[in-house]
Length: 128
Image (cartoon, rainbow, N blue to C red; front, top):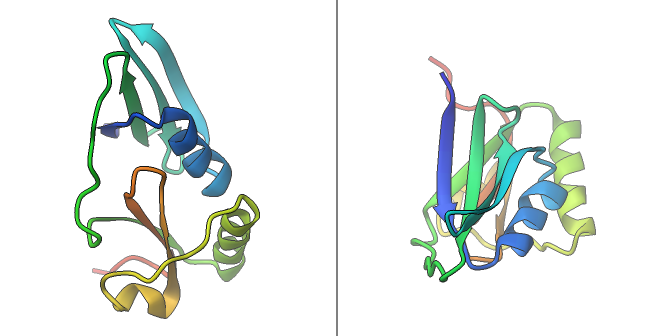
């Protein structure tokens, strides 16, 4: 099974730079002007789960949700976490205060060009 999370944007180039260059997610596919849509898919962290950002030639307004709607990237290894944070800072992205203070204990929160928030979290996701 594959999973794709898709969302529209009117800032495709900036959004792709944020996730590709800032977060280091690999581009796993893209398309241009297919029935009026262009898009880019980025791996999370590979091509089995990915984000898709699309832009409609006629515009695709998409206001960001609340400040507590998050994409959380768990990085168990501290060196991977620090590499990701450093990459974000080097590409001009500054961390912001999360709505829920829990995320600031072991993580850093960033806002993409559309206002959607991403947390880079140093640790593992919940354990069963």
